[in-house]
Length: 98
Image (tube, rainbow, N blue to C red; front, side, top):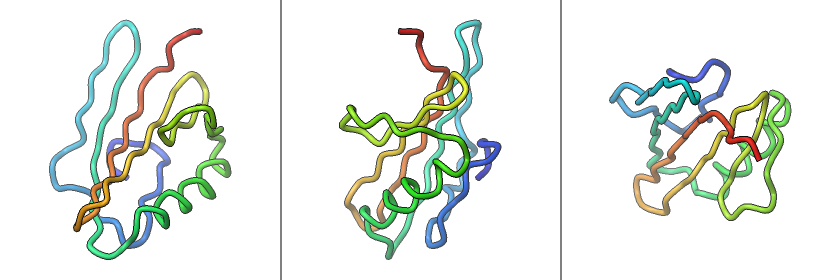
């Protein structure tokens, strides 16, 4: 997926033509991108990323209401709306120290 080094784009999703939004600062970075699907349901999208991301070293933060994952000091959040087309939002940011 453009803007993300090793984040796969699920079959049936098409990345938005707008370039990914990216910010870099002393505190870290933020990257945001969107994809759409005319046919794929929200649950199938979330199931795909729940299965795929751990294979790439991401760990799910299960105590959150959002689908969030952490790896090497970064947090990836994926949200899907229920519209047609379904819009998927990917946000990668430097994880704040707890």
